[in-house]
Length: 284
Image 1: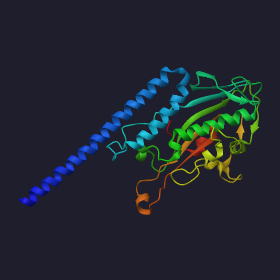
Image 2 (image 1 turned 90 degrees about the horizontal axis):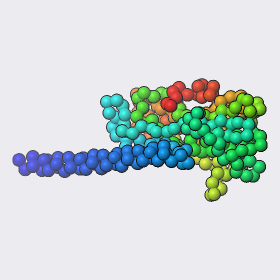
Image 3 (image 1 turned 30 degrees about the vertical axis):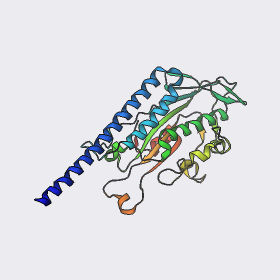
Image 4 (image 1 turned 90 degrees about the vertical axis):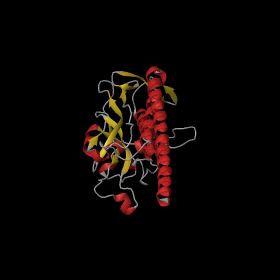
């Protein structure tokens, strides 16, 4: 009987501990849900900051999925949160670059032209394209937690064995106002250009290692003759900046057996035609 009482006490302590963990998790979920709602609300009603709010909301939703990850439910979902990431739409025109969260609602963005920040420039050129593309790559990497965590935990079963892509931005060149041209020096631009007061080069930031220990912008680190390294920008095509992750098969638990991660994640810029070749699934 004494043994039974001791066991009962241990069981009670275990239950209390378990309930405490669940209570803490529920509190975290409520706080995160409230924060996401606030982000979304502010983003919709503060027009001047809506692009910045959309970026922060996306990153926060990515981090929230990981922070609230549990054992999978019957649907396979591990977190009560889904990604909330808006696609950015950019159109290069003859004398401006427009940006917005929908193709129908855009406004001129500031770019550096002949040493000055302007919303209107004299003529479209490759430097204008490079700075916008480099910045979109930076934003995409930032939104998805700099590649430091695995994505799509709620869809592990659905996406197993697939290269899953999430488009951050679409870039279009207006054929009526932009001359047809090819720009071939995006990588060099990122190696020569800084993006912050700390004087961090785009290339250094974009090629930081992801959770798998590989360069996040792997596209830029491949040999020039590798088909995957192609970053030639043809103004007659539409481009996308996107993050992609390989979701490993779950039949064999590779991570437990080897102690290594099989998944991988990177950020890229490619034409719409090429993304269709490189992605098994487009998640948005």
